[in-house]
Length: 372
Image 1 (cartoon, helix red, strand yellow):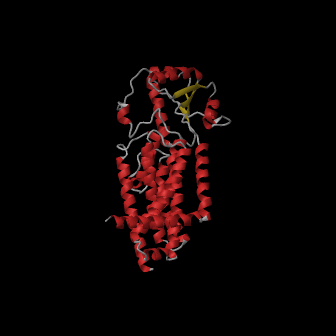
Image 2: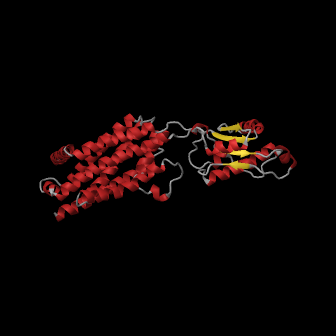
């Protein structure tokens, strides 16, 4: 009973050796692979690694700046810095960024009229001008306008006529206040997954070439079976993709506090893209067709990686993409130190998609071989 299993393993290993030899002779991928690694590493280290959570608010007249900052600090707003201005035009220029260094630009500016405190205390209507750059999103504008009204009530020592929920009940998802992730940290999953995709295209090209030249048909004419070819291709693709991604993880120092979780996510990602490679290579007729099919599958799989740059609740269709589970596990383990228990749903989703892609790719490959 042990001899057939050993024979199957020997056949798979023989196919893998052949594949690795063929890929080592492919000059295109021998040049492209290190270039992608260098590009990903260079982009990563050029990105900013710090997040400034301090809001810089300019106030005119300057005499109100100290009072407003004391009120803000008393209310727990430690991420707020109030800067006084003696000239309203200078305040507007600082907000617009005219001849102002980036690190000194204001988030917004508040121009209070003369006699503002007296008008507030006596209950008379008053007007406050709010300066904001045109790039500020509408929701941020609304929040700043609401903040001005709240400051007016605070200065008047009157309660705000609205009752808000406690902060812990208002925050949706994981609260990152005081622990924001820099752009460099957010790009890590994208860089690793980009390397995985590059290696998957190389495998897809090899499979398409062998199917077109009837090399696969010749292999299955021996004691080898289509299942042996599928396993060998999957292992070859996983080995290449995982090894390249591992190099990137080490260079980018992306193993974090949960190295086993990160390695498991990368291994699962390598298996996933190998399944896509098998399907694209088996369905492709030539290099261009294979490349088109591969890109058709892989570009949508990049969407969750870009979505990590803009944290929030992912929509249902994004969560249904094959790569969402892998990227969620990779990002959670490398960036936020989440464990297997926290990411069990992500791993389960990725495993299901990987198994489905390998089965579908094997069926397409078997049909192409039968036709040959």
